[in-house]
Image 1 (spheres, rainbow, N blue to C red):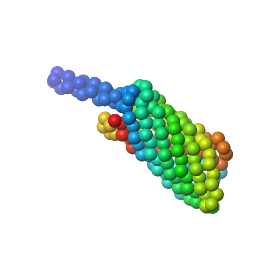
Image 2: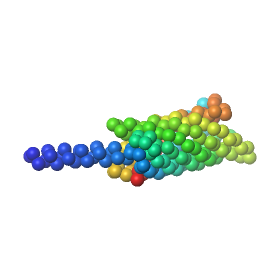
Image 3: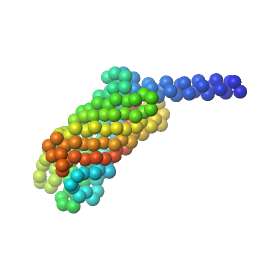
Image 4: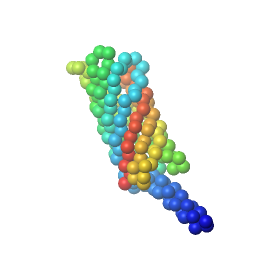
Length: 167
């Protein structure tokens, strides 16, 4: 009986140490994320689908710098919208529970039929890392893209679901 308790304690210690290892300085990160539930202030959206690719590196324990590239397609009541975005940001991870907060700047290039629109967004988000194993995590997050060009029509609140790989 005592051996089982010792093995269980050792296993729990190993799991807690490995969960914190993902957030150490020098760890690299790549992820893909799906977006699809956006709430905008004035546009009547019928369908939305987005894909993002992220890459990052922990520059200090719990602090990661990220780069992002994404594509979004949105069917509106009027013309469809296709948007490419490119951004940089930072994240802070709370080691105790897997929650992270992040903020960044995102440059969007939109094309609606023949019209083109460029904008810059401030992108705060909060998410959770659910670790499948030592390297792989499922990452749901809630975000708010605040448009610095057209706050009322271009700001969005939404959900993302990501798959992250730490190495």
